[in-house]
Image 1 (tube, one colour):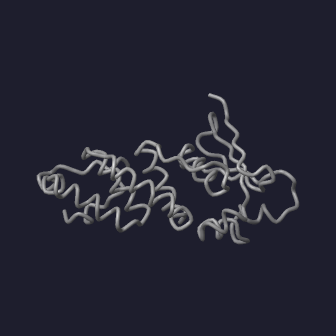
Image 2 (cartoon, helix red, strand yellow):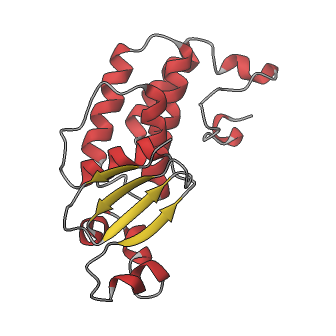
Image 3 (cartoon, rainbow, N blue to C red):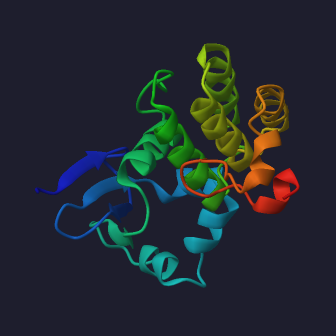
Length: 186
């Protein structure tokens, strides 16, 4: 597979390398935008980490920052949204919503993308009707720290009998194992 290049900021000083080296996605971004959005990225691009030290040089080439464990599709979506490159989509699959939510949690971006997250969760709550969909919404709400959506989706799962049946050795399928067992009283 070929490498993909996405430009969130043509003057960006960072080039994230997402995924494996054979089919990596390169995303050019601006470190200042990222530092405004996330305390985790503020630290990463500060003087105490290699990524930040590389920024201090006056190189015209973006600093390469490999993130091989991050989901390229989710990270591209997040980075484009943070740079106001595209209107955020509201028709993304629930599994992608969960991956975006997990990365928002990982990089402490939940506040920066709160408006989009709240809208996405609400829209999916209104259009979902299956247990598998509500478990993904529950896990996404948990990762996005959205208490209202977490309450509504857990209520739906409780009323539907899903949570009551978990005591019989049945596990909740949240897609990525994000929900701790103690969260639902097991």
